[in-house]
Length: 499
Image 1: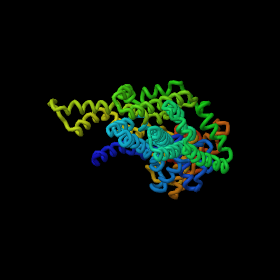
Image 2: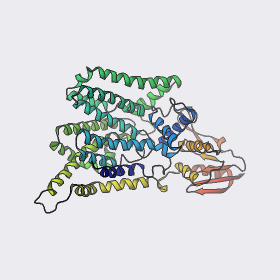
Image 3: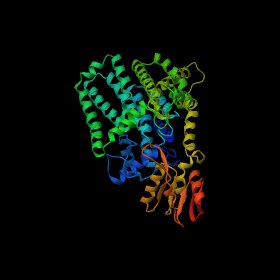
Image 4: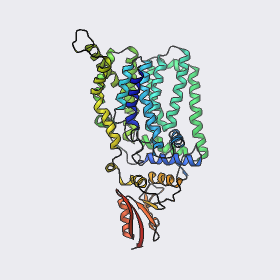
């Protein structure tokens, strides 16, 4: 492949993923909590137990692979929003390149690789918050689940014992990484893979291979070893995992996120996989003209994606980003349909008798721009829209104010749980500024909130920073003050007198 062409392709991949990655403030709730987990791990040196405000975190009970990567980014690039989000963006890039190189090197179809990668890259549900644009688990999980499916398919079709051995161990490591990223969600694509194995009549080959049990041993050693050590250092962790990641996600509704069975199907239709959802039938039609290996691969991807969609649809807790692991799988199905369109165009315009003859490079560029141009530039536009001030809730404006004003010694007064505020306090304290945090409405053990009157007690002359309207209302009822600085909805004030 021409190096210039690949450089252009790589640049196209990087722009939607990395453009303005660190401009938008940390989001509530998950991203900012992960950021605090990573910063406290960096400071306390405990790489096994994640902490939040100095205590073992039993709300975010996911294994710490993402947190480890964020800590590594902090060490390399410094503590900040960029370090929180880089692992997700890099995982998104790796998933995109995985589609390309697997199609190019294994399926021997470079054009399919280009098309599949560009479909994924222009998918709204992939280039979005809580996936590749924020420091959350789903982008990294999707990398491992996609890799697992690809390795599994390569294992099925391999006829070399040595290669089969390598692939089965690589699959075990990929599944291990998925579980160490997002707990039980790392297993979610294993049932359709096993069903496909039964259909291919290779289940006995797998179960009679000694390397299969060696691979399981590696998985169990790492995963069970982590959970055992974590429970040993942090008693109650396993019960919290059972409640948060298993029973509390699939069998019970958490945090009011109960939606209809058709929630994910509707969202995929309305926004998450638009416009590519309409190309799925074309991808199926294209399988009739594809090579046998490609045909089987596409069928496996669609079956795995459909199974995954069915599983998350019946979960009692439904969040919009749960569908991300199926997007790369469907992207290849769609990519096959688009690849066939381009090949038909190549054949038509390359005929000697045709008066309109073009080089394949120019023709591919024109067709690619026609198909991918609008959704691609929409994703670029989204990378700016994510950072618009008018889209930012007032409870997430603290970061923008603090970055635009000279840090002083003051109190941040906020309404309730706010990981962004906790992260900012730690960040500026590392720079030598004595920033204090006061939370007005505190979460109790029974998951109710209690107004804490004592947090409103300020001495004359104290400085207070606030952004939320309900907090401003409480201050206005109790104090006279003068404004020192303001930005958007945020104010830095000095207490003058009590009312």
